[in-house]
Image (tube, rainbow, N blue to C red; front, side, top):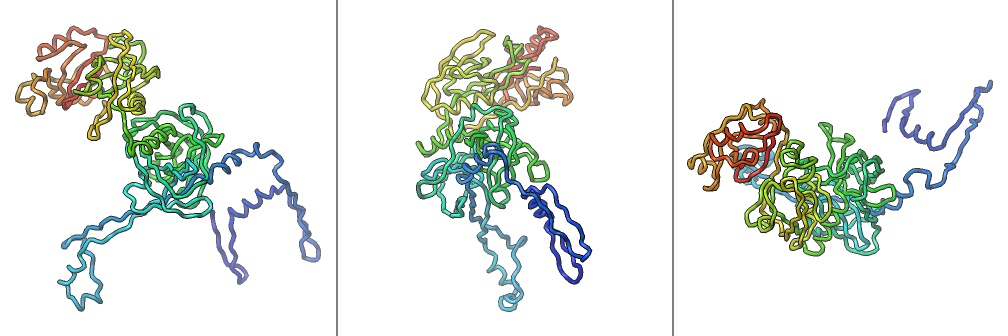
Length: 497
């Protein structure tokens, strides 16, 4: 809203430009006529006023919003941190009044860490009449005090029931019953182009509603969270909307607003992300049942299947998740799953890429049996695996780049000696050739080959020496991609060049 001030005729006048336009629009002014009378006065204005002629259902989403907004709350959290000080640099200066009593040497008495209170604002969604609230973990992370403000201005202290940093979901509880709550939708049925409404408390200005559409589904590999399966929307999501509701045109909760791409402005750019409600509900159910999130664990390093890899493995299309490595003593290691298998289904559900495989496995219960449909050398097979529980200290990384070329020009390799193997901290039985240098402008560099990689196979042929490597490279067809099995820091993965 823009305000303009000026002085005229000895009086101070204030004009509210945006407010004046808003009132005129709300009254539905069709015509205003006036004639100046000879007496110097103005004739009465003829103003036409009309109410909305359409039914309530034809007014957009006012009815849907009215039903949902009571369940969307503001969350204010705070935490106490220590402000470190130094006796030399960064020392707080002493007030001159006290210096006359203590002198400069007495300033050390004030050189103590001081408590500092950090505050943050976010949003949340009440999902049950018992007062359970879904929000983002980053809204309440390490908070010592959490206050929930309801639509009717009631302020209530909230307790953290549990959090899951991997999905950025937290479950809170406010004391009481018969709270307004939202109806959960089914995010697996959401499609690109569906109407999406974002409700929250951006910038702490109060509850607001923005509209847009679902721009994409299944967004992952963004580096925002460890587990990513975001709904992307262009409904404006601004700072303070975190933890708020993303609803469909029927008022059903389909996601928890989480992140935005804001470039350098810090504001909305039309690209926002929400955690699907199915994933958020799974996390909540796990927390309420077990006190923590128990994730299933397969024990493989999955890779996306590129067109070049699909051709090299005899697959008809570039879909599925390639088994690049199998962790020792993992559930996968105790099954018939093989390195080089392409997992295309999990319990009958299609798998398009590595991220989707992680998500599907993560939603299973530890200890359950899962049926994997795999392509092995172009032939379809079924593999049964008993899923384990995800180790808390287990960290895995996916292949950074799968761009392909046509040759290994610009790559030099050396024999892997025992000394080099020990220096690289590889297992004594590791065989292969070490990549000594990679031309940054080469196809191999584009494909992700790095200096220090140990190439163990070329087109499924084992290589133990430079001579083996050269022979395997020479036997490949010129126009076909070269498939490499690479050992990188103890983990193996396939790279097609």
